[in-house]
Length: 130
Image (cartoon, rainbow, N blue to C red):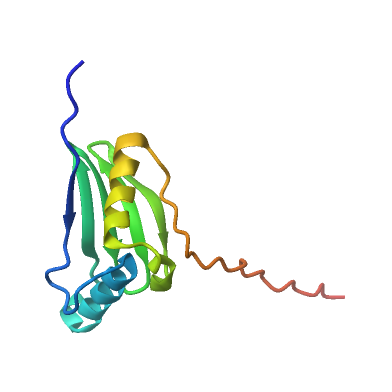
């Protein structure tokens, strides 16, 4: 059986203005970068990447959301995500790295311990016309 290539991890924090201690810092820094220019207002910023051959797990940020997406030559899948940067407050950079590596290596689900779960919005029921 052929050996799997090693998993590589890259953090893209050099373009951010402040040093990052947590994944929350990455999301906030990326959003500051996005909002700093009209040219980047509709862009996604990749802040972390774990790869093993053609399999890649990335963490991207846009104006409203962050998303972990898994990509292969066959397609792209949503792995996890949310909209509040504070969801990621408890995830250090080292833990983020290990989480992304474990996802690729073992298929371990991405767990976000600080996630703020909000109840779904229920549409108002319309009254029947008489």
